[in-house]
Length: 325
Image (tube, rainbow, N blue to C red; front, side):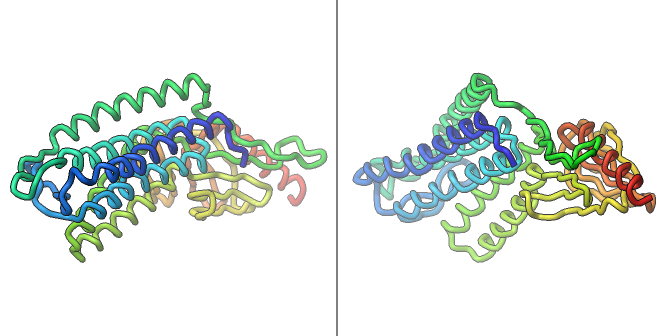
C-alpha cells in the first residue's frame, strides 16, 4: 500500500501533540511534585468533587496511559486506512481533551492538604479541556487544508496482465464517516475513564469491565480502517488490513454494481446480516459496492471510489468467462 506523504506529516503532528500533552504534561507535573501531597484524589463524584485517593506517581502514570494510548491507536488506524485527514484531527482532539482534563485535575490539587483537598473541583479542568480541544481541532483541520491532505485518496491501481483490457486488481478502503469517528472516540474516552476508575480503586469488577470495553473498541475501530482488495482470484474485505471479514472467490461472483446506501435502512453502522442473506459492511451514508453472487446472495460494502471497484470486478469476471467459459 502507498501512504500519502502529506497525510503522514499530519499524523506526525497529531502524534507529537499527543506525546507533548500526555507525556510532557506528566513530566512537567513531576518537576512540580513538591507542591503536592503524597496521595491525590483521583476519582470524582457526580458533583465533580474527589472521593478517592491514589499515589501521586500512580496518578501521573495513569494520566499518561489514558491520554496517549487511544489517540495513538486512532492515529495508527488513520495511516492503515489512508484516511489521515479525518483520523489525525480526531486523534489530536481526543488526546487534548483527555490530557488537559486529567493533568488539570492533578494541577488543581497543588498546595492542598488532605483536609482541604475536598475543595478541588473538575470545573476548571473541564473548561480548559473543552476550549483546548476546540482550538486543537480547528488548528489540525486548518493544517490539513494547508498541506492539502486528500480527504479520500484514490484506489490503488495495480499492474495489468498482458492483453488485459481491465486492471489486474484494485485496492481501496471504506470511508471514515463523522458518525463512525465519533463512536470510536466516545468508546475511547469511555475506555479511558473505565481504566482510570479500575486502577484507582483496584476493583476486580471494574478491571473486567475495562477489558470488555477495550474489546468493543478493538472490534469497532477496524471497521473504520477496513480494506478491500479485488484481484483475479476474488475479493478480500479485511479489518486492520489483515483481519479477514469476507473472502469471495471470483467463481462465486455474478456481477458488481454501485448502489447508494443509508445506514438507517440496515440497522445502523457496522457489519450487518439482513433477512435475505445480504451481508453488509456499512461505515456511513454514500456509495457502496454491491456484489451479486451466483447463489442469489449479495454483499454490500461502503467504499471510496466504488465505481472503479465495480468496473474492475466486472472486468475480472468477464475475463474469467472469456477464458474458462
